[in-house]
Length: 155
Image 1 (cartoon, rainbow, N blue to C red):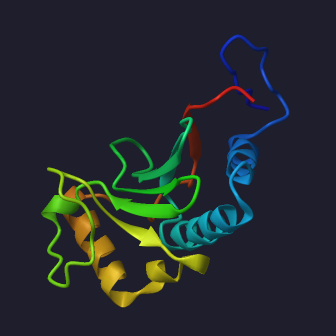
Image 2 (image 1 turned 90 degrees about the vertical axis):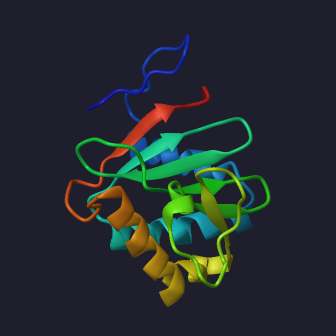
């Protein structure tokens, strides 16, 4: 069984990356956790082969969706204390005629995820996801759907 190391602590041999992620999500309010779990369920179904890159921070829990073998994340679902956002990490390159993506930076665009993550089923948003995959030249359908803990807070 794989072990997870936390800084200055012995390995937590009984926890898988999925169990670690579930525990990290459970630290958020029930509403935020439920929204995040609904979003993850939809994204995992849509992109079953994606590597899920978990970057736990003090004030957020980003979960990136990247190609199976290597390469950067194309999307990320990020939990914050009061809400969840879905990020298009190359959002500036996406054609968004309805102007539904938020952000004014040089690269990233995002949307706020609603209760039960219904926005992720919206045909317009799904079209933006397809554009993002094309821009990135990424395939998130093939692969093992591995969860990778990139950084974490000691528990």
